[in-house]
Image (cartoon, one colour):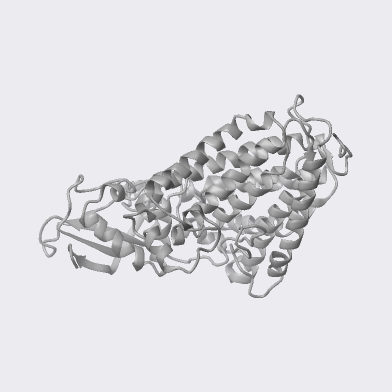
Length: 470
């Protein structure tokens, strides 16, 4: 029975938005699940750096619901992750969308619950804002309907509210957090000190400073002004969404931020009004689905009180959840900008540590050898490399970093697979150490003369030489 075919509740004008939202969020879920299947066991598995069984035995309860609260094994983790991949690929192919509205709803709720199970035991390796962003987006996507229904307007506006919090929250945290955003000099430093530069970051850093200042000013406009127009009548909302999408594409070109930019681009399509594909979109909506969508809208409205209050708080929280289900979260990025870059360089030797024959381990994404050009990895997430950046900034990390060094001393195959290069070809070194270096981009002349992308200087030991058993 199609009771809710009225334009105020659902509209075929959201056909393109639904198409992009469903397939785009599912594709990002696939990337997240693959990342977990390949990295989680070495980082957090039974024999990982921060083993989940030990964590679950220590905490009273995890920060949110998780299937692993009753039992964790690496095999079960991989089963959860690869199940999520299969479900996500089915949605990308559009298979659940061909059925009744409950089929894609079940698919997205399954991915939401499966990935939440991983995040809620992921500890520091899953403490990133884009984890809870994906969970919130995945939950909302469950209420977009199928090809047999028109797209619910409530769900579309819930997505716009998500984009508003994401952008406006990031804009406010910048203005509150660091004077370089207020004096427009933030990009004098950002491209050089960001967590994981990409192949174009060196070039972005060397753009003229007046252009950097204009970029910061443009960023303030996009994050503090444009989001309000997502709720304006069309075509204004579409223009606002397009501005956000273009800005996010610019950020994709200049750095590696996992799937943060990708999911923002996808979610911003909620502001686009277009009936596409022309063959898609039913006429109306089953009463049961309309009731469920209304209930979701009421839930989001109630839960939104906490992030709304947070936006106007002097002690604004960045990337935090106010409930155990990871819904209606607070977001933000780069509330402070690092002025200088430091890197922890890990080395090993097969002989006498005093002899000086130290060889450097190569990480996949973080800067290492000065002559190696940064690579593009986003939207894939290299969790170990990101934690190495925080470690160099002084964030607590010895609870996982010393176990990491011990894994290198044991030549643990799972740990070595997280790295780009093992200088000992699978054989255990006798000693390992970690040193702290200052890094800066080479100048145009230095780059031309040496071919190096980085200039680095040693500052001292981060962890002095250690051998097995120490």
